[in-house]
Image (cartoon, rainbow, N blue to C red; front, top):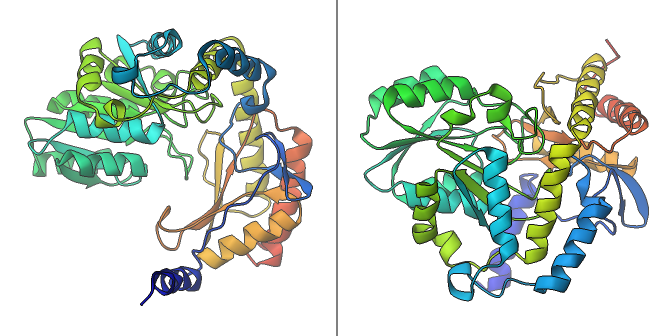
Length: 394
């Protein structure tokens, strides 16, 4: 069998399962509305939660950084040297997260994979939430540790698993805000469990950083338990509208990771312009809290409106609204019909979600307007009726 025939056969099976994916081209920045093809559509699938991807202050920060430092970092920071702007970003992340130190990575994926595979080894047990992000799952695999998966957000199951699989060295790891369902991890209970059993607690704040908490510090700040988190990771690529990932924790932890995290040591650093944009975004997060309040008001209104239209909408107090539709083809058809009506929202299907739970994942921006949301509810409701997902309004 030729290479073409081999992979054509594999693609055919993916198509038959309703899981074929294609990239849609956007000819404009990631704003509340984007140009897809030859027309403007409402964007409901972007992680630019605060609407900063189009902010002129971030663009200017990038321009200045390119003029001062050039377009790329040139290599690994341990080989080619580091720039002051990278050091400044790490200092600001540590201040933002109220930790002793921080370290930046080229992506959030590399941060999670690098941290977990450096912290744990075959003598450890890692207790991982069932719905954790792929980067956490891969980090667990790379570490060689025994990985024990506990039920999603189920602290009782976690306690049972800890008793069943005890370890002198162990790590509990969880997303803070789960990006597909939009729900929050039970962080206060996880902190208590970690302390009771002498385990480290690692929390990925990727979708919560900049969005949750009084100062945008994330779910740990929202719950008031920042001191209970041993390792905090996240990304600049969502609410902060840049790129790269970070880990925040004690100075000793960060020093250790500089010397052991393979995804840091063997990767070229994020471009200086990315660091500059991240710094500018952090400043906006601190000084413009109304963006967060507007975002959450949008999400609450949309959840309520879609619920009253007949959809089964989970009541999670975050910027992500998930409409579970069931089979992949239903979700794909729903997404395609919405695009034809001027709304960009992507169908999420296995393996991203379990079989039978394909859905539309709606992610909102602070820069959406009430008119945008009213249009979305009208069109989503119309398509829901066409496909038999909902009946008449409640």
